[in-house]
Image 1 (cartoon, helix red, strand yellow):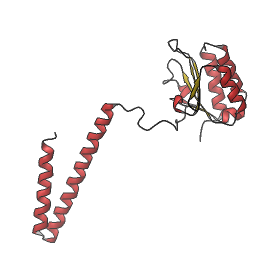
Image 2: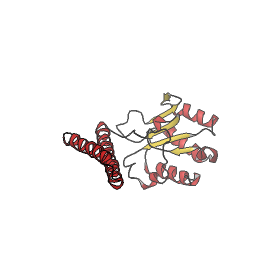
Image 3: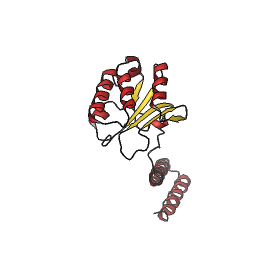
Image 4: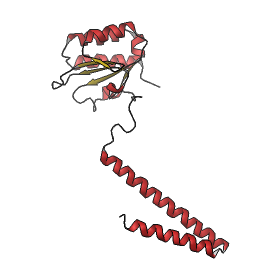
Length: 184
C-alpha cells in the first residue's frame, strides 16, 4: 500500500511547523495543496525529483541559490505563482516533490512519506569504482561457474569411462585455472 493522503497531510504540516521557507508563496502553495484531496492523491515525495516530468523541489538550505524549483516537461521555473497556476489547473496530474532540509535523509517524518522515484535510473548513485567492483564480481562469478561446469563434465566423463572426454575437459580446466593465475 502506498502513502495515504492523510500521511502526506501530516508531513506537510510537520514540515511547515519545523522549517522556515524563504518565500511566503511557498508556504501558501503547500497550504493550498494541504486542502486539496485530489492533489494530495497525485502527489509523491521522492528523492531526485528533478528527474521526474512534473516536480517541485523546496529547499530550506541557506546555501541553496534557488529554494524553489518547479519542473514540467524539461522546463524549470523558480516562480512559485507559475507552479501554483499549473497545479491548480491540472490537479489530476501526478506531481513529485522533494523537500531539501537539514537532516532530510535521517528524518523519520520524511521517510514515512517517501516513495521510490520511478524515473530514477537503477545505476544513478553508482560511481566509477562501483562499476569496476561490479565487473570484478561478475568475472569471479563467471570463473567459478566455468570451473563448476568443467568439473561436472570431468565427473561425467569418469562415470562413463570416456578417456578422451576426460582428457579434453581436464586440459580445459587446467588452462582456465592457469590463465586466471595471471589476473590475480
